[in-house]
Image 1: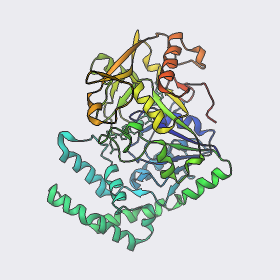
Image 2: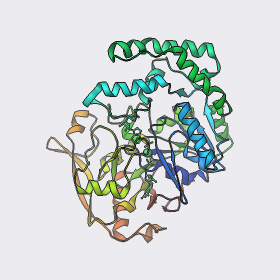
Image 3: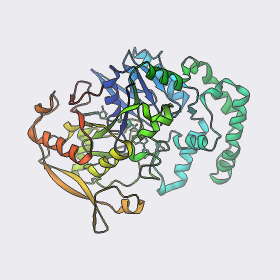
Image 4: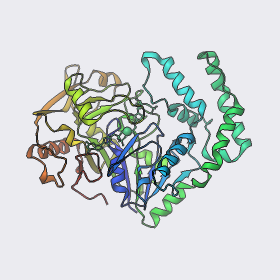
Length: 427
Ligand code: GDP
Ligand code: IMO
Ligand code: MG
């Protein structure tokens, strides 16, 4: 029962889409277990580039069944337009399975997300504005709408009424906005029912049966460890659990079934939106990482904040996810620096700290302690094996592996499927 989890080890955008697509050819199912269309996963196949938001990156591998699990929040209009966009490009999406228990991002939750951010002013989180937080809040408050509710108009109407009851009070009295009409929301939601019907399934049963039949299942995380609602830099986080445990709840599989947990790790660090980021650069090095790495958001088009590699965070990701492997991405972006600083510890109020502090205040005060590693200038994008890499690039990878606490089993040297060095097989 080979079940693998593949997740972001930093603040998202580590290259999960590429890594998932790479494995997609050898796995039977790829399952998204949390998040929604706040994710933007780029996959490059030959000269074709795909930006996936809700669909699992396995959708581009013909033999693979893509699954949207119960833990995902689904904006039906985004899902349908993503599907038709792929169909127009000749991708067969008919195998997709969508959990009847997944929660729906309603139009009013997109509004609430945007209005709340505006209300927060300079304290805003910098969300993607896709309704993610309010939809998970409805789920926890037990006023959420699930995919299965689209197939019972009376229940759907009652649930929308319950959800809008309090929301309309908040929208009108606190935010000074117009109330949202129940019948309009219901009508819009019912309009998606028939179009989604072919995909709706009991995905928990399907996945567990697949595992019993020794099929290979890959769970693809959105976002990243430091954006996790429990383990991330709260409150500057997303509203779900991208960490490994999220795969169990978000797909309905027991932890005993998971055989491998792969952390996708960028050779430097990026972050989108607000929140602490100890190794962030505000100089020309940061600008160069952004330019060379193409660090611009796939979902919102925002420039990503860039900084050096942070080993404290990588160690933390190893711990909270029980990582068995790392997939190091974008090593090629670091080509050309004479020396590459790597953050090995923090200095917090004059004291050296080796591990991520649990206190938010301490983390906000954390200053990176850097070790300088020698750089390389050779083009590494054609490297096929570890030994093809220049000695200093090899040493950089080995140093990161040593500091991060799990073996680096693959290295990305470019965005394409082939631009990968495999060290240990994942399957
Ligand atoms: P995700 O959200 O984790 O899937 O990552 P994104 O797709 O948002 O951002 C990663 C970006 O880096 C995408 O544009 C990828 O095509 C690109 N990418 C992934 N791996 C590599 C790599 O090893 N080298 C380079 N140069 N680009 C990469
Ligand atoms: P992928 O899957 C990077 C960030 C947002 C914001 C915070 C909360 O492509 O790695 P939300 O809309 O989720 O309530 O926003 O989380 N964020 C991401 N940052 N990559 C992502 O996804 C992200 N999804 C959300 O920028 O700071
Ligand atoms: Mg992304």
